[in-house]
Amino acid sequence: MTNLRQNADVELYDIDGTLLKRSAKGGKNNEAINLDLEAGEYYVGVLPKGSARTAYNLNMSASTIPDGPGTDDLGTLDSASDPLTGEGVLIASSSSEATYTFDLAETDFVTVTLDDLRANANLELYSSDGQQLLDSSNNSGTSDEEIKVFLEADTYFVRVLGQGQPTSFDLSVGLG
Image 1 (cartoon, helix red, strand yellow):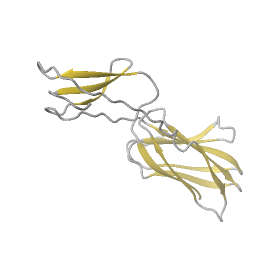
Image 2 (image 1 turned 90 degrees about the horizontal axis):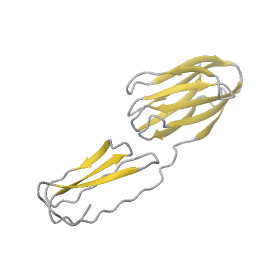
Image 3 (image 1 turned 30 degrees about the horizontal axis):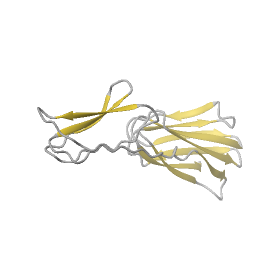
Image 4 (image 1 turned 135 degrees about the vertical axis):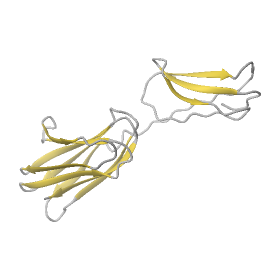
């Protein structure tokens, strides 16, 4: 919000009327809200301070945020390619997730590690059909997540699940 002649604040609400963010700078300073949001309906409120009556320009814009890494193929895990690695970013949503696949060349112990977290995220390992949960790691906060499991040669899916705050992460899948 720009070109204020007197003090006013701007607020952003979701469809349920829950305040998501407020910009409340003093005086005639420009107000701005920058926030990553899921698709949906939102409302903006302009609130003059006290008895202020002011004209203003309100500009709004949106840009698409990529869905994140999507389903990325990490490759085939064997002694020559140990470990396989990937990285990604999850947006601020409890439904944000990234999915990776890898092929295990031979039956072996596998360690899947999720680290360098800035916010909480969980880790899940699924069978080749993507339906059967084989193991998971749900540590709190920014603690590393790790799954150690004995697997047969096959294709597997790894899901990284956001827990409400944006985070970047590193993922590795290794033998042993």
